[in-house]
Image 1 (cartoon, one colour):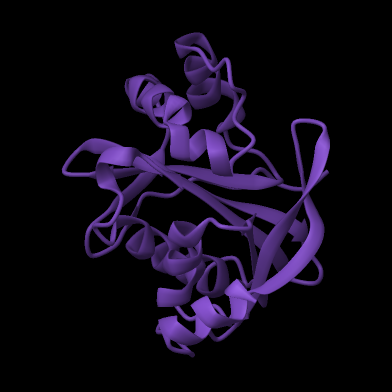
Image 2: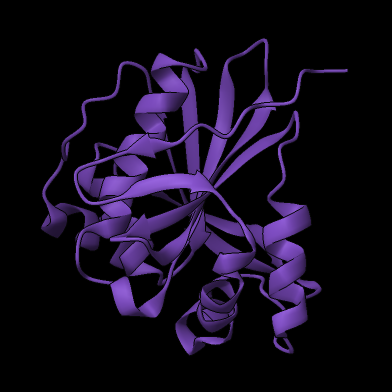
Length: 194
């Protein structure tokens, strides 16, 4: 059995990343019932505050397979971000995140993504970090584009959502990460709009 991965406190320019605790439950609930979150994630449509409490105390607890952080800005819950191990020997994993609606469009998730990708490469020894999202999730695409992920690829039937396959976007970043865009945003939009 693999070792449990610690959840260290990380700081970026705008964010502090730390383990979730019960004080984050209300913010998780608000984020989960937001229409944009419902549209672009697999969060249950009947999400409750009780589910949020379970999320912050059980699902995000330390494990060998993932590290899940609460994102805080000025001591306020601003979202969640995680790294999930795909293959330890290959140094490969994936990145997932969701932003609380009050913090969208402020560079918060870009800072969080940059911080955890740096941690994955520098501290965990990853060589590859993969990002996936629903087609049309431009906010998620912009956050990873800003930190150097290549132009995403359209993949039919990439994701499973509520019992059905849906099309997605995928991009893979390799160490060492460039930490800045490798294409213009217009190039990204043009490629994904085809």
